[in-house]
Picture 1: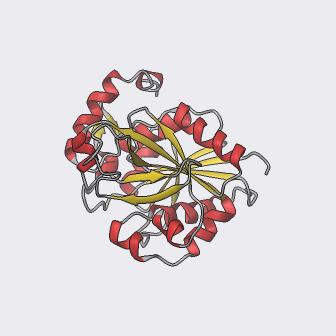
Picture 2: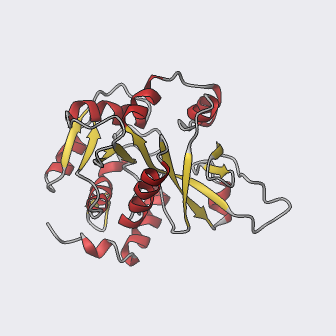
Amino acid sequence: MTGRCHCVIPARMGSSRFPGKPVKRLLGLELVSHVERRCRLYTGFERVVVATCDEEIRQAVTMRGGEVVMTSDQHSRATDRVEEAVANMNAGLADDDLVVMVQGDEVLVTPEMLGAVVSDHRRSKAMVVNLISRLRRAEDQDDPNTVKVVADPQHNALFFSRSAIPSRARQLDVAVYQQTGIISFQVAFLRKFSSLPQTPLEIAESVDMLRLIEHRLALRVVHTDTETIGVDTIQDLTRAEEVLRQDPTTSLYMGRE
């Protein structure tokens, strides 16, 4: 491992639940640009790039000084877009260097979250590491737009579901975690992942990390109790804007053109 680490932010205009969301504005700044700027606050990345097939996103990011890699418009999974972007970057990364995928709607990502994922990945030498965050509101735990995850005591993911897991029927205060779109891959494993066929549970839940579990490949998770919001709806956008307004990380980049 050379210790190199790149960040790739996949984003597209054609979201089925919220079309055009990457360029929707929060506090006057596009959603994808919030994510890109917050990722740039983490000093461990050699490069931070947005991977997209859409000209609107390219213009929004580059006009604010961000870097964009254009990709095919045929990708249905973010991981496939990231894999193509890494190939198009010609960065010369070694097989065991790291690529951190941060979904373009992970608007509350922080340098601390990114540092925790990268540090754990290097320490554990895992193939892939996914950040998971605590869900405290019952409506989030029951929301099918929110992907829940359960893991074993060794921090290996056991299952992802859009249903409420674990059940709160017998223990109302059981800890519930959601999957975030912050996932770190070893470069060689990212290529391997993209080559694996999709699996039945992955398709049923629309969660691509289930592909690993169904192929009996280890997926390590890192827990955070800090709130994250993946923007999937207009309501999420409104809620995220209010949280951003109070978030101290926001002041580190807003207004600094």
